[in-house]
Amino acid sequence: MKKETLKITLFIAGLLLIQAFISDLSMPPEIKNFRKYLKNGVDCLYFCDSVMRFYTRGDTGKKPIIDLIKDSKPGFTIEAVDHPAYNLDIYYSYCRAILDSKKRPKAVIIPVSLYSLSAEWLRPSYKFELEQAALQSSSILNRLFYRNIAALKKKPITTAQFLDTPVYLGDIIAGKVRDFDNKSFEKYSDDNFRKKIISRYMYYADENNPKIQSLEKIMDIMKDSGVIMVFYIPPVDYETCGDFYGPEFLKTVDRNIAFVAGKVRAGGCEFLDYSRLLKKDSFAWKETFYVNEHLDYKGRSGIAAALAADMGRIFTEKKINPAGCRKK
Image (cartoon, rainbow, N blue to C red; front, top):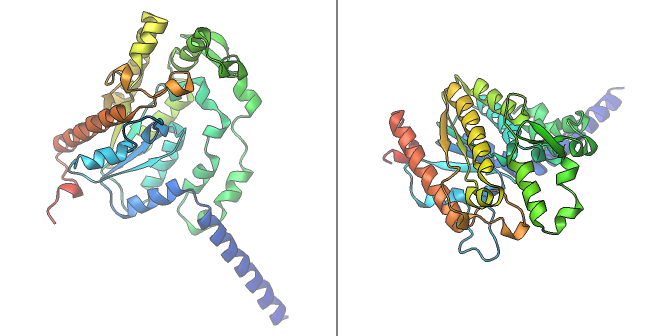
């Protein structure tokens, strides 16, 4: 009987070891880096989406924004945790994990992409269920079984539900996602370009927007964390869209920026508006036909310089001496 019990115990232990090996091996690299940066005591943690590293074939440089900030020797240590399609939902999970960490950064930078507030970013693949499960806890049990937890969770939205999501022009329904995201858009036309501007930027941001709700949750949990929360509006190709769509584009974008700014400032956080920081020749969306917030090397350099300067100013105003400024 004792031998059988020992065999069963050893078998279970072996299974757990295999599970641990598989879980660690398949842990998303962004989360591994995130935990490493916290452990190393980084001053500033910068979350971002594909804008961080995107470059075109003819770009004059390939360095991501984070490397360009580091190259400027800003006087503080900074690391980036980024992935295409990252958004305020997953940033909330990361911020919750920061609170569970023994070491916290002095500041966290989070972009509030106006494009990411649109219906297009409700896409099921943009939910990052696996990453959210992995970030839920740093306990051994969660690290062992986060994949199982993610698999068991009910999907927040199906593809059919996503395609039936309303797309708004102001506060009026202009159609469904399927009307603005289908095979007909594989061929460029001015009408398709206009439709993409509508689906990506012409909504009115409000309290019911899921990403705005995630923004508020981030500010709420980080309120007494001792971490400076910095939110910024990434550059928008306002020249191209304004010329193409007309003055209503700028009016709507400015309205949405004011709405986000009001939320962030009411939450006691830092707000930076870079929406009109760059001219149209700094954007890199031309190869994909339709406007987005991807930047070329000139644009990435511009946002890097602005962030380095503003973060230095914020640390000075808060009278915080980052590790990067300390004498060794």
